[in-house]
Image (spheres, rainbow, N blue to C red):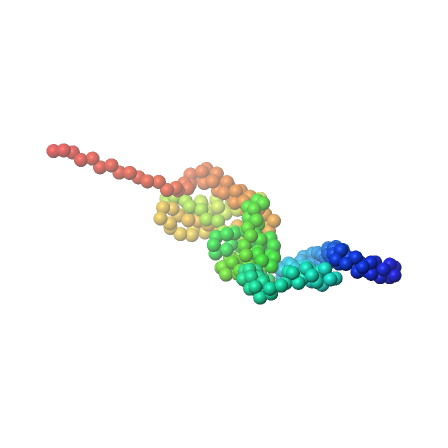
Length: 288
């Protein structure tokens, strides 16, 4: 087998440029095969680690290793044979100009990479957490790469945010360090309404919802969060409560269920939900 390989290598050298090109192509195919196998092994290893702990760190390290393997494979291919040397000289001639161009183009990439490292170390959120950014963008953390964080919005919508952008914003984590998620819901009722009745309806709507779950252990007496009279607004009274739900629950389904229950219960109890309207007063003058 070794003799066959040696003879094949000599034959490649004998046909000059074509032999070097064939050696380059075979090296590229071999590198592709090795990288594919390594990716499969890496995926099997990190999938187990991902389920255990440090999920966002595991995801980020996984992406870093993938980039490193690809870069090593590319450099190895371009260092194989005379043709590869020729291609490398063509590609890397004028290193000063090329370096300046790459340096300018790579600044956002380097910034995102460094911010991604900071996010994976400090862990302001984990994969699966629901977060809300200072800009008002909200969603469930789906993935993190060396360049961006992926948030899952409503339905199949994904929100792609660069690591440098998300690292410079205030982040509200709605499920930090907790197995369940929470959402604070506010409702306006008209002045003159029976506030105690409205609070009772709000609490019961949460208890009856198929999507809400208790926030405290069963038997503690406060399984669900109480409803609160929050404030006097300009044209309404504000009541609210915290709703807890499992990580897999759709936020749209939860809001829809509780809002419908509140709407029908308020209508049945005669509690008005105020809305903005305008009174126009007409003055008429009498001629003497």
